[in-house]
Image (tube, rainbow, N blue to C red; front, side, top):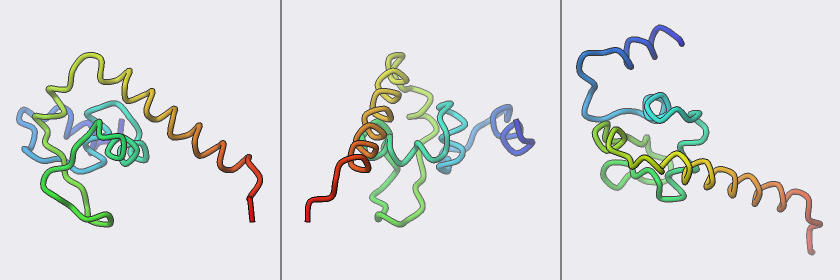
Length: 94
């Protein structure tokens, strides 16, 4: 655990909003998996950010995720990579 992560996770009071990196720390997923979870609508950024805007997440919403959420999230990530890999393997139809 890097010092920045330790300071965030063990802070007596977490911020209301967290970045993609901090959302990854809170959920236990990798930072590059957070956009996949947003695309699958399992995580919702605060407000209505554009496609290339920095996403911020509600810390309280992340902490209140249901107990079965990690299973759904892992399944969504698996589907994402299966789809990506099948696209790579299939021949290009020109």
